[in-house]
Length: 462
Image 1 (cartoon, rainbow, N blue to C red):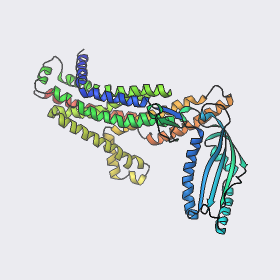
Image 2 (image 1 turned 120 degrees about the vertical axis):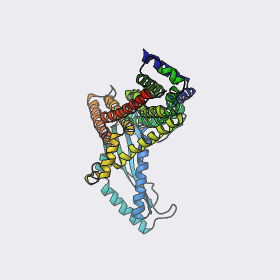
Image 3 (image 1 turned 180 degrees about the horizontal axis):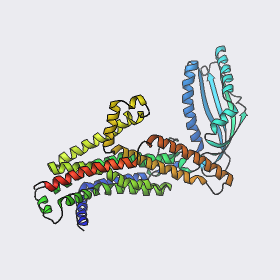
Image 4 (image 1 turned 90 degrees about the vertical axis):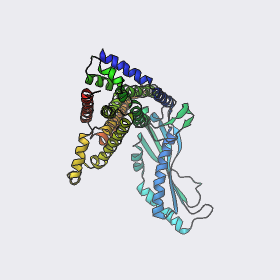
């Protein structure tokens, strides 16, 4: 009951901080903004158009090197037709022309003999390099079934121009669900769009939840919480207040520990609003209910406890709010820098035997091992979100009930292959980190700092 009473007192202290409501208001406005996003599936013509944009950029560079810019070569998808009546673009069957066109000379001027020869030699090279089988293999990276046949080139080509044209028929894509298809996010309920048809819905969700809110937003919340809670413990230790507290029938260490836990409420409540709201908004919008977003609430609060434990030690020694803020922010800078430096100088070179046997490598690795793992917890949280997104997409592999058993089995196989690729990429980026070691070392740091603060509070004569 004593703990509940102190916790209620800490909660009242949190709610009495007017800026607490400002941070909550900012969180709510952020959620409203996220709620206004409309996810519009990118049609197949925009998807293919984006592919040709990348191909043409590479081709221009090649032609510049090979012909000194005299030949203009580009790839286009033309005459795109939908062959079925399915609503989802990733389930559709399509027919289109794959065209490679090139030209020389200037507009309005007939090509010279040398330019005609260049055009002819390029046509021979392209026919040798690009066959129907080659094109089929390339398009099977996107489409489930592909049939390519020769098509007649246009007869109204201007002088100095040539083209190779193939007729392509496809049946479905290798995408098995909505989350793995490219979408165009549009803000303010569709009023403002971002016409970049390259990011899947899962990637957009990951960017919003993991990068914008989880990293940037949580970082701001942590810094604000550090500043706004810095006065809690020094205020408790102020002359007059501490005199009333220490006469209560409760051990000083227990009292201080309870006040410490109560101070964590500020970060916990802010994080609960933004991450709980984000879980609800994304779930209602996309049908993707990510429990990993809810797991971020205790994780971010635990990260905040690192800096709050530093403030606890500083508070019992100085009773200064300003010094608490400065040393907590300095700790954040040190741990942030240490995490990235360890990644760049140690983890990325751990497989190099000559490098990782150097004394500086071993010493830096030891320093990181003994330090609280602020950045590692960030990266493990990212891994948690990415892994759940991959699992959700994999579970949705069955597709529509209108599909045949054979088609559903094929899509399930494609989903399994995609899942393995995603998990391989996740493991490559985050596999070196462990929840067990990160939580253990960080918990020990918090426990040592809190224990030292409690000891100092117990023996100090007020």
